[in-house]
Amino acid sequence: MIKGVIFDFDGLILDTETAWYDAFKKVLQSQFQFELPLEEFVKSVGSDDKQFYPYLQKELGNQLNIADIQNQAANLHTEYIRNEKAREGVNDYLQAAKEAGLAIALATSSHTSWATSHLNNLNLLSYFDHVVTKDMVDRVKPAPDLFLKALEKLELESHEAVVFEDSLNGLIAAQEINIPTVIVPNPVTASLPFENYHLKLNSMADMPLQEVIKTLHK
Image (tube, rainbow, N blue to C red; front, side):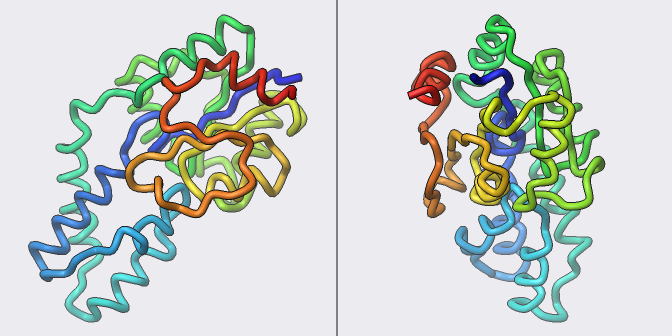
């Protein structure tokens, strides 16, 4: 029986990922005439930058000032998401989970301040019983630490929760500890080779939360 829901944040609740890709793409194009391939950028989505910056360093060499690129991209990103709303269906899912008496957690590879400030701006923070971030674990996704910590805080076993994810790194993390996973990709992650998930939706507006949970019991 499902007793709790665990949501990713970036790209799932708020599509920060498309904005990051667009921001880095613009900076790299204008400064280096370098076209950032989506397939390279997306390898880091849902995780951290351990693959992304070494890739840029390899491609651009000594001309690359990573701190400068980060700052320029961050400024553009802030501009891009300033008026961005939660993805379609997110509010309905959180409301439905609360009304159904399900425990609700966030499990994100981002910092606490990033996730909570955005959730607060979206008026969604109050829905979450627990917010689990990279500040609380040794390893981010695709390691399962964030989901293990969320289950611990929710006091649930893996089969008693369902994870909502937009990234391959998130799916891999959930699969490692056998949590049923619903994939809701965004434009940046839509082409990733997702496999062995429970369900895949274009958006949370495709199917009510109650119906998603019913499919878990079949």
